[in-house]
Image (cartoon, rainbow, N blue to C red; front, side, top):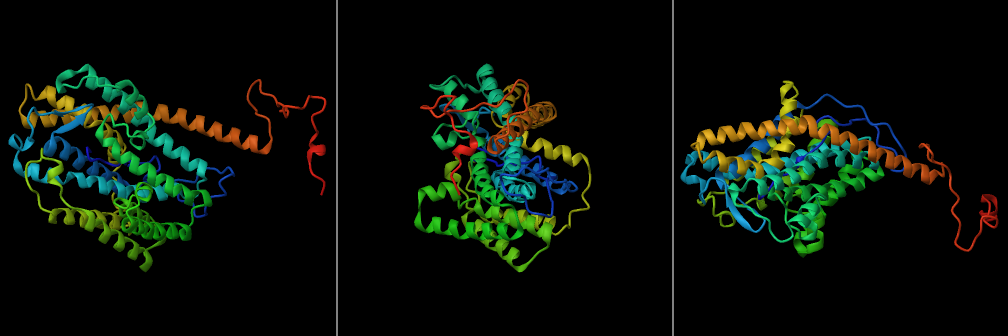
Length: 441
């Protein structure tokens, strides 16, 4: 979304946006062990196919907004127009444009889902396991997106994108996913929501470090509610970047919905959801001035209806009212969500620009949709599993090396051997033995 997703972050990331574990990660009843201890990954509960469907719907409405309501994106140093005109409403049916205009709210739905699945995926896990799952879930498709997007933009000039000053350095910085924190622009504007997801992960990692329990998660959510409120009152820029009060209600409500799903609804959980909804709706307003491409002054009341629908859907999931949804192909749709969010704008707009030279609106939209979904399938089928496996193994080996170092155990790798490290003024003969270096009781 030039305004987003998240994703994922959807992701998220999701969105992911969002997780290998997003709809199927650990639900062990016991809290995780202390952060320094190793632990086996928790068993996976049955997959929540309803969440897969909801995630795909969130991604689809975001794509619809960008392709139909806006049709333009700021890349490099100028705006580009996929349909060759400034306002797609002149070639698209207005009812479709009107619906697509509200597609940016798919981001809020992604954040709701993210709160749910991140809490789910962290249950019973150590901090290392939590970090491993997040990194291996987010980065493979993201790296592919960054490299593929810049390659398509520069190799296929239909959008008129050319190299801009610092292109190479911007691309390298984008590979870290932290570019927005350093004021480096996103190669694809939809990446902005990944920064919001990363902030949420870092905040929730505090709970994971202490061990995830019902009580600690509840404390975390209520503290975040009041801290976000304090941030709004004071206007503190630093706190605003950390606590992101504009998006906190969605993450918090998502976490509360997971606690309902796992432990059952309580008055405190409904209060948490209610406060989050009331706060969220007060901050959700139309902003046609920021997107003149939309070309009409759309009203606010449909936004409220969308939020009611989103919270209702998540409540139905939390109360197990959608457990009957068990159509297995929905798992594939859920897997396509994160790549679809990442790839639909730069690459999707390039497809539209070339197709629309020869086809009218509807055939262009249909062929571009099939093409981008096919690309997303290839990414989730071949790119993600391979890179995820490499990342997981590398991070797990790194964490194991850290534990061995903390325990003073030599590495078990080939050719490895224990080394004695000397204080600079010592020689091998004068280095103290362990017994000599210990203080007397």
